[in-house]
Length: 75
Image (cartoon, rainbow, N blue to C red; front, side, top):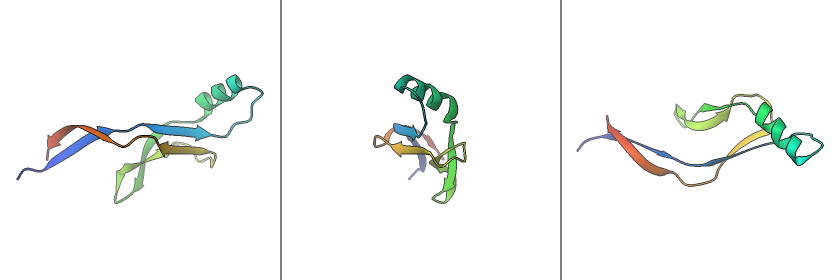
C-alpha cells in the first residue's frame, strides 16, 4: 500500500480588540495592526496549528469550517 500526504483547506475567523471612534475605523485599525498568520509549534511539529505574528494577547484565530481535502502527493 502506498503512503500519501493529503492536503486541504479550512476557513478561519480572526479577531482582535481595538479602540476606535467608529466601526469603519475599527476595521481599518484591525487590517493595519493584526499581523500575519504563520505556522505554530504544536502537536508534534511546526505545521499543525495557526499562530499570529504578534505577541499581543488581544488577537485570536478560530476555526470556521471543517477541512476539505482536495490534493495529495505520494510520500
